[in-house]
Length: 87
Image (cartoon, one colour):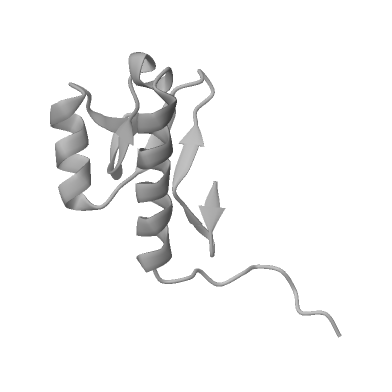
């Protein structure tokens, strides 16, 4: 998912969910859910957390975390589009 060109969640090829969270919430999420930053191609993505499988079953919590992730994406600077302008 993305907003204004900024991704705020995604599934990797194995079905692992990553959420983009602000620093304070990210640190709390990692601690509370005994998880880690999301790793892609051997690199930890500093703004993304790995959502543990057990949490995926908690719809209320996931709704809250997705809302946090979307709210954070709203604070980010929009990225320029690569689409050509229509004449």
